[in-house]
Length: 323
Ligand code: PEP
Ligand code: MG
Image (cartoon, rainbow, N blue to C red):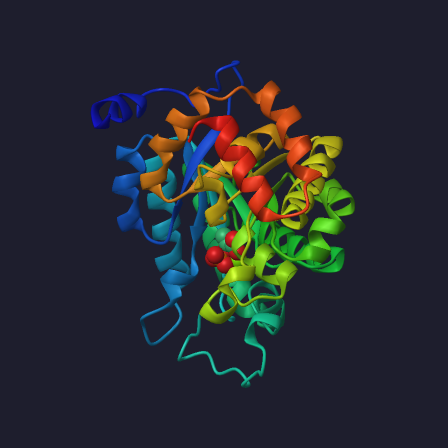
């Protein structure tokens, strides 16, 4: 079975009925790239750049960041690389960034909210990204957007930095895709409006589940509420994919759910285009989708969406997909 999986590393990600998907990998550093390449991932669907900022005493410089982004883009050799702008706050702290204590950090000044407050940090990262864009296929992704004005503001800052670089004579790719994560229920519910102003969505189910169920993703006492297959979550995911389809943009998922064998058949049926997961999950996922029919799961996922509980959904999927 191991040898069979290994063979799949050179194969495209295709369903039994011929639908092509992207099965990408999540990374936190350049050390993770070896596994991404070994497992034949179709790209990087999430580079969590906050790890560049953690475990040190000061901010990484523009040049240091540029070198890292360039390295990742070159290694992926033309495959898609989705780099997420800084997602600090919540559970991830920086000792050298002095921020006021908050009583609910997960509901506080986190990720893009912080970047829009501390534009200096944001601009440095965006410049590093824009400069690296000529070395591969770069997609830039903004985390934790709740409302349209945040997206517009982030895009405005990005455009300003692009114009500055162009005036300085620094080459910048003109085919960068700009997207956003959907990890706040308000963004999922407002996806039809947001979709008109981005090139892609990537659904961050780790946070989307926590915010939809009002259950801290790290708190064992409420872990029973952390339900990826709850129809409430599935309906939000379905709504996001449909809104993206109507606007003609693609949808990915980079939360843990994207690599989960019980979730994959449903996500495939709903029409998810890209699944980004830990590198070790890519080949098992490729093997699984090769046995699934997208057409069949489009109908089955409709049935799952109408169910009342996570347990029913789970049982239904496991029976129908011979997991
Ligand atoms: C998510 O929220 O699903 C996600 C991918 O982001 P992170 O886990 O880094 O918060
Ligand atoms: Mg998140």
